[in-house]
Structures are given as structure tokens and as C-alpha cells.
Length: 173
Image (cartoon, rainbow, N blue to C red; front, side, top):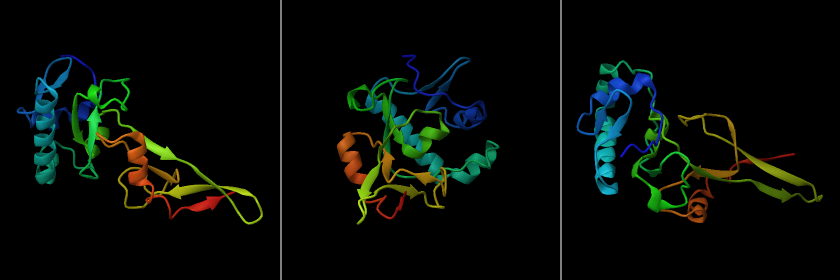
């Protein structure tokens, strides 16, 4: 229906051309096939499944050999640009989390900073450091607790899901 939900880099157009059953490429826009949430979600799932299963030959064929995708098997909601992701009913469809950045789709996360007092009463801020295995920002400093906003979960449920991820961080004064 013409609703904008991302900004796809030009270099990815050859990749999308490999999936005419999923994307309609026009002169001024790219549309995902489907006239409702379920149909668009099915198209996105078909795209991510085929891409994941045939990643190397597809990316080589499209001259995208440097493309790296850290598959998560998590569904992110895709919303019109500027929409509130806390309203799942506004989602246009869902897609594999790892494809949001690749396709220029806005994605959302939950983050929590943790403060504590040591034995001397000094407040410390706990700062996490991302694993070197991450495809996005490996080794960089991070919030103590954080993660992606998985479709269908509330902000609180998403925080509860990721709260144990950051417990290995160390305090910073």
C-alpha cells in the first residue's frame, strides 16, 4: 500500500531481484508481496529461509561476498517508519531479526543500566562488553542488560528474556 518501512541500500537490489516471488521491484520502491500481515510474513519467511539455506551461492551470485548475517531465529516486527513498536497491531509483518539491518528496516531494543553500591557506599555503573563473536559491534562496550525487541513480547517481557545476558559485565567507576 506504499507504507515505508525501511531504506534498502542500492547494493542489495541484485539480491532482492533473486526473489521475484517475495519482492516487487519498481523504479521508485520495493514492495514485499502480500496484502495482509500473514501473507507478508509468509513472504519474509520464504525469503529468509531460502537465503539462509543458500547463503553463499546467492551472495556470490549477487556480488555480496562481504555480506555477513548473524542469524538469530528471532522474529522482529516491521513497522511503518516512526511507529511505536510497543503496539504489535501496527506491525506490517515479521522478519528474521538479522535481516532488519541488512534491509534497512528500523529495529528496536530494550536496554537497562545497572547501578550498585560497593561496601564503601560508592555507586558503580555496570558496563557490558559485547562478545567478539557478535556480527554487530563485536568487542564494543554495551549496556549491562539489553537485547532486541522480539515481536509479540512486551518491553518488560523482552527485558526479562535478556536479563541474564549481561550479568557477566564488570563495574565501572
